[in-house]
Length: 142
Image (tube, rainbow, N blue to C red; front, side, top):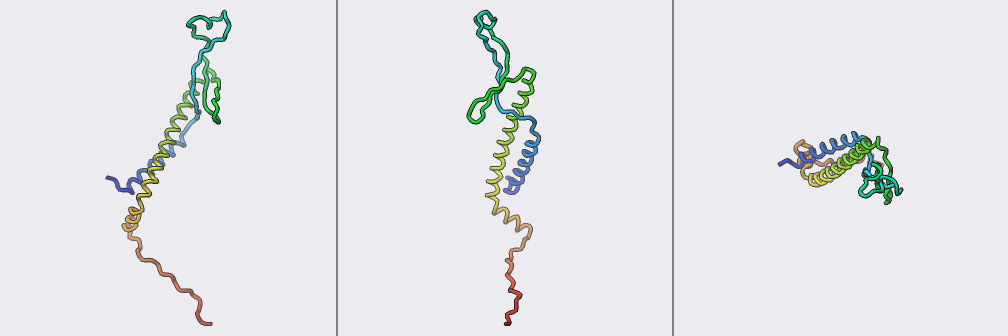
């Protein structure tokens, strides 16, 4: 079973690794990419028939901004790039979530470590004597 100090060191190392991963993040884009087929409403159009697919596909990116849903049309040639940006955003969020969890575990381990820290100081043979205060250098003569 690892000691508290070993656990703290392991968690600190994991935190450093996660921070490096955060720095490697590429283009980030939150939201959902949706493929849509629409009907134009013209009676003579091929999309008006029973079971017809409709016009499309057209692509839209939907996300929430300030409590409102925003939809943006994505050109067909940008769909693959947009998917990659959404995937990168999700990966980034996973790293942030893991970083917060690791940091919380590290904080808990450090709370449990005061006794271990004093034992570590004893191993290093730190002085256990308290220093005495020197008297003032002023002369006591008048």
